[in-house]
Image (cartoon, rainbow, N blue to C red; front, side):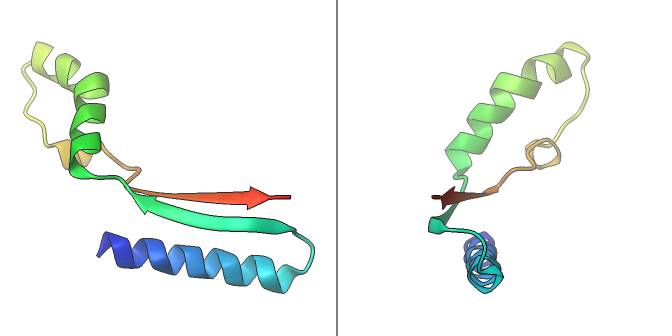
Length: 74
C-alpha cells in the first residue's frame, strides 16, 4: 500500500510540475522507508525516553515519515 502511495505521489508531482511550465525538473523520485530504518529511528529518538518513564508505546505512533520524495530542480 505504501509503495502504491509513493508511486501516486511521484506521478502527481511529475504531472503538476510538467503542467506548470515554469519549473525545470530533472528528476522526481520516491522511496518507502523500510522496517529496519523505522526501528532504528525509533530506537535513536524515542525508545530510551519512553522506557525511562515506563510508558507503553507503539513504534507506529512515533514514525511519521514513511514515504519520501526527492525533486531535483535545475
